[in-house]
Amino acid sequence: MPDAVLVELCDLCIRATRGGETVYAEPGMALLLAGQPPVLGSAALQALRQQPGRVHSRFWQELDTRPIPIKKAGVRHSADLVWHQLADIKAAAGGAPFVFCVPSHLSHEQLELLAGICRSLDIEVQAILNLGLAQMAAQPPGESLCHVDLQLHQTVISRYEYAHDPHEQGQGQLALRSHEVLLSHGFLRLVDRLLQGLSERFIQSSRFDPLHSGGTEQQLFDQVRKVLDGQSLAAFTVDSGAASHSLDMNQADIEATVDGFVNDLLGKVSARYTVLAPAFAPLPGVQKKAQPSTYQIIDGAAAAAGAAALLADLEPGAGTAYISQTTLGPPANSTPPPTAPAAESPPLANALVHRGLVYAAANFSKAQDLAAEFAAIQFAADGICVTGPDFRVNGQPADRAKPLVAGDRLEVAGHALLAVRLME
Image (cartoon, rainbow, N blue to C red; front, side, top):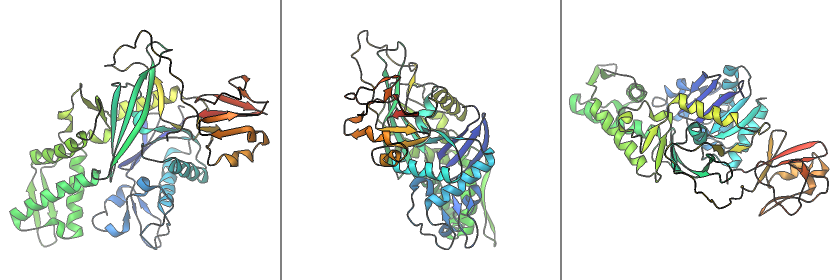
C-alpha cells in the first residue's frame, strides 16, 4: 500500500508518514477556548500548565462520546476532538487513504467509533494494525516478548507470542495475547517527577518555587520536555517577572529520575524479551541501559519497516478489520521447531469484512439489510457457520458443519466477505 498514510495513534505523538516522510507529528492534546475552534497539538501543550482547565489531553485515551468537562468550547466529547485532529492529518496528507497503527488498549467499540469518524471525514481506511505488532514485525526478537508503549497519561504493556508454523518451515505466527494498562506511568507523570525535583532545588538555592504560578511552571515544563526529547540545556531558567532564576543542568539527577521511572516499568514486564517503543529513545540515559539479550529500544526507522512488512503481506480488502497477528520468519534468538510438531488449528473467525466494513455478532443484522442471502450466515459461540446452499468458501461449496476460520473467503450472489479474527 505505497500511497497510504501510516498513522500511529500514540497520543504522546500522533505521527503520520507517507512514503517514509513524516507529514504530521503532534501530541494528542487540545486547547479549548470559548467560541473558537480547538487548538490542537504542540500549541495546546504550551498552555497545559498555564491554562490546565482549558486543555483536554485524554481524548485519544478515552475515545468515546461521553460529555467532556470543559464547557462552552464548541465540542461535545472526545470523539469530536479526534475528528478535528484526523481532519488536520487528512489535510497534511493530501487526502490519501489511511492505515492506522492502534495501541492494544483500544476496544472493539472504540475502533468502530474510529472507523465511523473516518467515514464522516471521507477518509478511506485500508487497514487497522496493532501498534506493537507493526513496530516489531520486521524483526521479531524473541518467542515470548512484550512491547511497551509510553503515552501521555498511561503506559500500555502488550504481550505477544511467536509460535512456529508446523506447516511452513522457518515461519511462524507473531500474535498479540494480552495487554495491561499502567495509569501510574504516563509521560506526564515522568515530567511531574522531574518538575518536583527541580522545584526543590530552586527553593533551596533561591527560595523561589517555580511551581507556585502557572506562568513559571509552564516555562520549566517546556524546558523539561526539551530535555526529555534529547535536547541539551546548560541550565534551567525561569523568569518570574520580578527576577530571573537559574539552575545548572545536573545530567546525573535527570538520568537517575528517568532510570527509576523505566525500572518501575520493566519490573512489571514478564517476558524473555522487551521492546520499548520509539518514544523511549530520546529519554536521557535510557540508551545506556539497553541490553541486546534482554530488551531493545526500537527506533522510528525500524518501526516503519515493521509496519511496511506487515502491510506487504496484508490481504486486499482488509478495510477496518483489526490485524493483531501475522506470519513472519523466525526470531533471531528462537529455538528450532520440533521435528514432529503437533497439528495446530487456525483461529476461528469472529467477524466478517464486507466492502471495508467489519461485522461481528452485535452488528451483523445491519449487513443482512444489504443482501437477503446473508441471513444464512449464523454467528454462534463456537464461530461463524453458513447454512445456505449457494455459498462458496475459498472457491469451494461451503461446508455447513465447519465454522469459518480467519482468512476464509466467503462468496454468494456477487458478494465477497473476508473472515477475520478480532482481538477479544
